[in-house]
Amino acid sequence: MKTQLPKKSSKLLITVILLLCLTIIGAIIASAVLKIYSTPESSELNSKAAIVTNGLECATLGKKIFDLGGNIADVAVTVVLCEGVTCPQSSGIGGGFLLSYYSKSEGIVRTLNARETAPAAATTDMYVGKPNLSVSGGKAVAVPGEIKGLWELHQKFGSLEWKTLLQPVIELCKEGHVVSNYLQNVFGRNEERIFNEPSLREIFIDPETNKLYKEGEKVKRLKLAETLEIIARDGADAIYGGGEIGKKLIEDVQSYGGILTEEDLINYEVKWSTSLTSKIINNQTLHTFPIPSSGAIINFIFNVLSNYKLSHDSLSYHRIIEAFKFAYAKRSYLGDENSTEVLEMMENLLSQSYANEISSMINDTKTFNDVKYYGPLYENSEDQGTAHMSILAPNGDAIVVTNTINYLLGAFFRSQQTGIILNNEMDDFSNPGAPNIYGILPSPANFIKPGKNPLSSMTPTLVIDAKGDIRMIVGGAGGSKIPTAIFATIFNHLYLEKSLSEAIEARRIHHQLTPLELQFETNFDSGIIKELNEKFEHSLLENKPDGGFAAVTGIAITNGKIEASFDPRRGGGIEIF
Image (cartoon, rainbow, N blue to C red):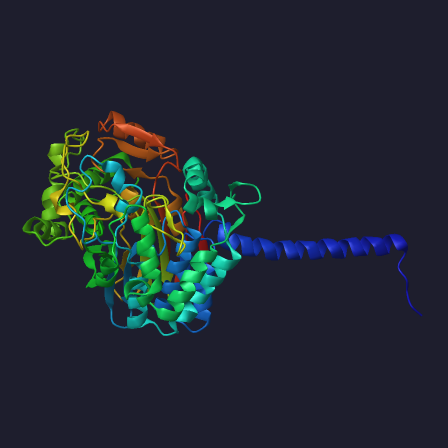
């Protein structure tokens, strides 16, 4: 005999079951969404690997490559290409990158410089009296290096087939990538310019609404997908070996008035080197990137501050600010050349005895509002728009990479035959001429020269403990504020013992000597800011959290536990497994 529930009870049971199903489905969806949009997360002790990206979908694509049996070099290829699709305002194959690769089995940190170079037809004075030409249009474009760099990385260390690594990115281009809140804001700030540039309007304007794509909507890059399919088949030769993509790219750049030639692409070479090192707290080793990166000034800042016991108080931050000011003064001596001046400064920046001399110049009662006190040589240009990725492999290897097209949306045009958005990296060089508004002359070490890399603020950074294990993988996107943001993250995590997410999210200060003002984020400790102003005489400039401070992504391993974090200032994607 069957027992039948009353109709009311039956309806109630059905309602409960439906609600339970909806709750479970909602939890699954929320979990997936949180992977991309949430605040940072930590692993359980048994996790072995992590990927953190600026691009919303890129960490997930990287994990898929690990799942296919790929190694960390394979993953880096896919993730870097993905960033160029999902962060078109900051990166892409029309630009370049700096990458550091730690091989745990060898105990070596290799560096790969795939940064853009000046074309053969470039001259030192080509922008004198015509500064806008280095900012947008064809003459702003330097020789892009991204595909050549990724190809070299894969040929040297990759394990999966090249085409396998590009396929997920090709599919993303065809299906469309999700517009992040940050990208929506970039679109909004450049709405009129995008509408007025046909090559950008074609991909960033929804044809159905005739409006810019919004957060959560998808942007398809069909022409770029075609280009990547050819690169998947032909490798780097598609661009750098006389291939069809390189030819089309040159045609389009020259149609915008550019001086780039096919010979520039054929002659482009990446550069392998080793990291710059210095000791920091608990006998750990800081590894930064050599020229054309600004990595040496991070080593220098830590060396200067090693003479003090630092904490969260106004005197400590005064000393940190003074170290920043000296660091940016010394940065003005740097450039991609082997002159005596540059080589001597690089040696000094890594020298503890030189750092001790600088420490003795820090006055614990006041700052100096005279630029000359800090000994700058000249002013340098700054890169603006970048993207950053941090990767930890199950075997303990690590890759940290920052890529860029320089300004937001680069040279502000796209090769319509290839779908590639071009860099305006030529603006990162210094130009001879009149002093800037602070009376500081341009830097000869960073003057334009064919084949030369412009100086960069990008500083992919690793911290390795005394046992040879990765302690931190960290880098940032955001122009001249990158070095101080990386310092702040390491300082907050290793010295103030904050969690990685707290270290990254914490409000920051920044000083780059010129202008002579301390920039601080809204909600930085008001008591400390007040003392820095009233007691130590620092001039202040308050910035909102979205006011240009660098966005950091990082991975930290503490007592076997992995923590991975992106920066809420920009957002990103995380995978821990």
